Length: 381
Ligand code: ADP
Image (cartoon, rainbow, N blue to C red):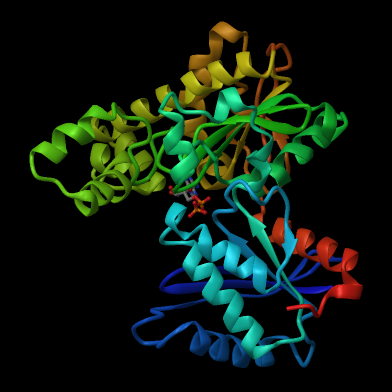
């Protein structure tokens, strides 16, 4: 099946075309400056359609899979899109104001352009619908949950749903028997506690801001800081900007990209070293906590841009896990590649793995599976 995978943002539309039988990547690109050079999502779709005509040699798309950030409490798995589903995605917009409206616009634009092509929504939150209540509840008045849906949701679910079974396969066990801790470390970063192949806790919460130190996000802070700053005159937009775009590694090291920070640290830049240590320390604490939460992890797994490539950051983290009997194999930690691999010593109490993620492949696979299940009712938009 030829699946067009779309990640529709408010000002850009990223796409890939995947052949699901061979996992071949047939086209990939981005249409940006939507709302500026490109007037709207419908025009972006026109541009995409003309690019695909050139790039696919006359082959046509069988299905479209959309990355949707927020599935709220409703969506626990990928779904075939119809009108009611799009409205539901739009209704969840208050929980993801930058992302869900853009996803809905992308879905509508595809429907207008190619009304017969089945579309599937794949939600970043879905994999974490298995969180037990004690993990998703904030210690806040129940009315906030009932009125506003304020609870922990978790994100990066598509990546965890792909990496957890891959880690299990690497260990030679059934996915449903896998207990582990997975760290998805990209520009946004989170950790998930996996028990019996299911998510039982994760570091991102109501929004992707909670948890780890990220490229430009603070992760966990004392909420009183916000109260203090509000009293100093910061409004909601200023706080949003501060915590989501001006904090994290950017605030500590002066830049948000891990490669630049590692290079600066190697050259003796103290600010960069401190930034790495703060981020690694936070992550090590989460790994220790989730090791307890899963009742003893069978593996600690690194994935995404930094997790797969940032060997010195991995070393900083794993060096702090000594009390758990975890030992890094410094040589193996330097290896690169797209294969799952072990980076701990043979006598490490718990194996440490690098398992590459591929969210687009995961979305393409999920899309093909949903469409195959629904071939009969695929044109019900
Ligand atoms: P996104 O969240 O945007 O999908 P990625 O998973 O692509 O992000 O990860 C981006 C991060 O990975 C950046 O901080 C980047 O510096 C880091 N990264 C990529 N390659 C390397 C590398 N070779 N060494 C260290 N960090 C890397």
